[in-house]
Length: 442
Image (cartoon, rainbow, N blue to C red; front, side, top):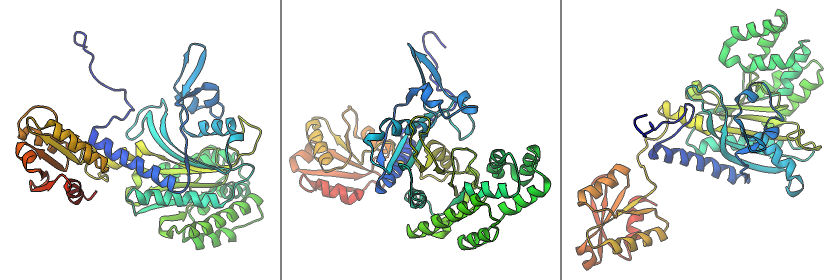
């Protein structure tokens, strides 16, 4: 600190973007929102700050350590660490006012006080969808959620991605068949397979007391691969009478059948028996999504089915299924990998209206006319030479500049300059909007 000046800086683990990158980020967010709404999901926006007792009702361990919790007056409050617990509270609180199945999307910030790492943040946007039923929820919803994932990443401009799908009942039942105890710990170990590798998994399973023979059979099971049809046939062939395994296999077959009905190409999804999702929260279908050419980024969209969303808040069975896109992390990783379009424009304006001295009123009037036609326009109202004004447009990446001076006012013809190549066009008052549209393809 020098004198009374404070060095401008932000805390580690927070992302702050320059305008050009922020516009790319916003386009991604808008694309996700538009896709969610196309499927009929309704928007929800819960408070960023909740009562601590609400947020801690379904958490513990690491989550409780990471939560931003503080007191204000007599209130014990905390910043939300995800969008799921607020959803549970919301559905319980407004149960009698909602129509079920309740289909909501929520795009908002969450906060976790974990150690900042490359690509992981303390403040981050999540883009969630959930379908919540009252008492029961059709398995078609599980397939529809997978279809939403597919359509979202297609809309974001990706072709090579794979939605990996599994069923927790299937895994749980197979583990039971092997006579393994500590089933929860085994599922958590399997969930780490991609990070720790086969040898790491063997070590973890040995550490929780799984016998070598059972480890071998479990690894053999997890290694099963093939097309969707082949996988389902092989899973049926392994059936040994465990009811939970049979239920999981049956659910997986039904969901895959409905996925085909939603028109999702098989190249974009596959059964992967290693997908476990470490949280006990999930009870059926689970998903993880990878970008095929950038697997090091990790899962870019994950989630699954749960039996009872709001058991801590209401005496109703509210099953649901949902997924979340961690947008802040996804954006950061894609930018680091060079997968995002080059940030060209630093403003939404497509047109800069540039008045010469004495033409300010005409420029403002023209800008109003352009905006009324639905085209974003800005007026440069600072003094300066024409070169300075056009340099402003160039630096911000504004495609067109409309120059208004004494000659333009007298003739009624405006000069439209294309900033990219310097070419100039003319148009009168009635034709200026059409000329702008033709040059910007808006």
